Length: 196
Ligand code: GAR
Image 1 (cartoon, protein in one colour):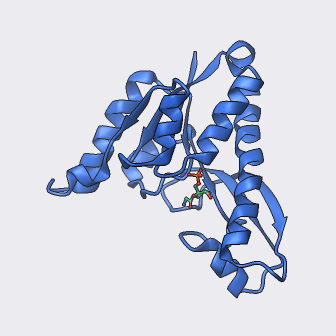
Image 2: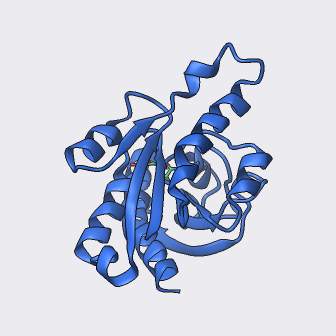
Image 3: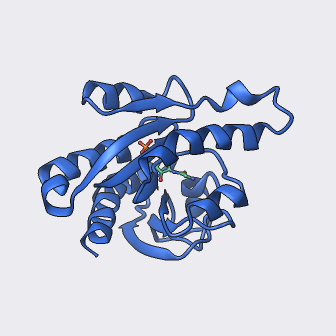
């Protein structure tokens, strides 16, 4: 079985788009693949509720629980790895996962960890991508699915979706248009990967 583990931190709309595609396109029968676990870095992520309601194994590794550890990030990531690795994941999917992972962890999952980023990389790595695209006067925005590497938002690009920026756009209207495109892009990219 090809196990897919999805990491979230918030709404989880990309996660639910992937889960729905897995169901409608019958990934289990066609690719012997399933979403085996949804992991959240915060206990109050909306996506957790959705995952549980849809019968998915869902777990929290709360990044704040490691605040007092000598090295909070490595303690948090050790716990994440402990939750993920028993499943021997074929793919670890970052879907709105808002923690920056250390080089040790990205190396550990090299070639098996994808991320979706809300910009047309290599433009606008990091945060506030939509406002920065508007401020720069861009005519197009979009989303990128890429392999995760040691450097933030800089791994090999797998695919992108492009949307227009309208004169009337603000950060929120643009974010919504990009997010809708993400919901098409990410499940399709994962499905293409499973076909290989
Ligand atoms: C998405 O727009 C995703 O691209 C972005 O967070 C949103 C999560 O939405 N990810 C990042 O900014 C990662 N740096 P979702 O929780 O509804 O899927």
